[in-house]
Image (cartoon, rainbow, N blue to C red; front, top):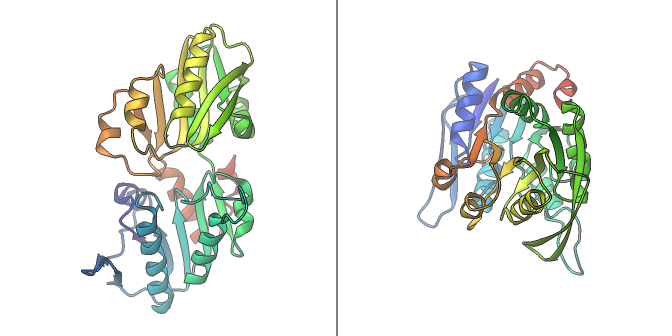
Amino acid sequence: MKLIAGNSNQPLAEAISQCLEVPLTKATIRRFADNEIFVEINENVRGEDVFVIQSTSAPANDHLMELLVTIDALRRGSARRITAVLPYYGYARQDRKTGPRTPISAKLVANLVTTAGANRVLTLDLHAGQIQGFFDIPLDNLVAGGVFTKDIQDRIKDGNLMVVSPDVGGVVRARAIASRLNADLAIIDKRRERAGVSEVMNVIGDVNGRDCILIDDIVDSAGTLCNAAVALKARGATSVRAYVTHGVLSGGAVDRVAKSPLDELVTTDSIVATEAVRNAPNIRQLSIANLMADAIERISNERSVSSLFD
């Protein structure tokens, strides 16, 4: 097994390396003066089972191109199998046509990764399940539910829990966490007037006196979560925490979360934390290194990874 890390999330790659007790393969990834990306693998990979760890987070285009060029370099170096490990799959929100003459960019990225030479993909909490069908190669879509459930149980031992979906589209994800915790489920009914702006309209379920846990896959502007927290607190929630897999947190999102009624926002380290995130008083990251390492080891040893989806 060989592990190669792109530049998008070195801390996570190093943590996965430590879990597997496999050193990161030496590789040179740099840019020419005109910002063209150059990749050179500095170790022999002929006949090897290689895992390329790269989140396609901001700057998404740079990190995506790094991934593609690295895969191409490995293919031309005669690697036996190349697995693209994408803790965060960028462009996933563009999974369907939203209007005339608009792209399905999630499908385009799938085509690019496959054409570059990847033999399989390992990712975490895809924004939409149908993206798995965009690939003509095997894809394993892990879930962060087990990581979240353990943290919630460790930190809220005597709480009166209520799991909350911030929108109707996230009900399946929230219900899975509620089932793990043996908790009730509530739903936020919201209306989105335009892209990036959400307005909470109603709360379906009685949250009075409950410790509410918001569950989502991506937090970007954080407007939805902050509005949901306001609505839940207004309806008598004792506390409101949010557990979100991918902390994109662009623009003024961190400041918005800090000033919101959210008691805590918990994300995974699928996207490397910025300085603002590290310094935020109510934002915390959980490591997915063990989960990703376990999946990588199972794939390399040709063992089932289905138990990791539960």
